[in-house]
Image (tube, rainbow, N blue to C red):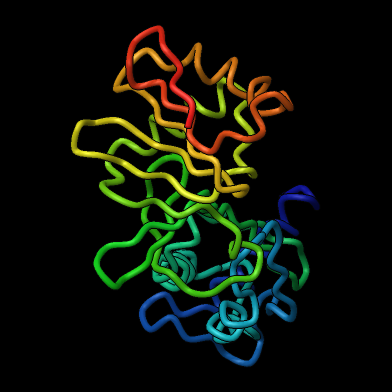
Length: 222
């Protein structure tokens, strides 16, 4: 004799197998756990309205037989999305957790703009209010992610930066929002980053607009 709990389990799978057609991905009128609600969480900058509209095809399809590949196909079109995690909340809710590529600067290539993340990932540009004040990168951005992470490591106040300039000599200038410029050497500038904040906040240096560290062990003020 089959135990009661095993019988219920077999009955459940029988219902599933008789209501799902694996060949044509179509469902009959008795859909198993039809999706009625889609929740998208953790989106910081992404246009959720657009994404939700593209995922409307999931409504009234089976949560049990979720079309994961079709969801990934949709989200892969958006370069702001780095990864997605799907969570089923039975009986009828699909929760989508989004990880985003968050830009830290805006780059310019000819007449075309783009966003750049701290990992160096390029993102197609479109106007987003929360990113309007991001610093702009002028010149080659290939070493930007390394440079940016050195700034963060040394607690440089990124929000004070208006622009980054990269030169063929493989060095950086930093232009602050108060129009003061810090000219860094090619290498060994971490100690400069550690001390520059106290110099910039010292009133005796307030009249200077250029802080030139390109010559080793020297600070030239202009």
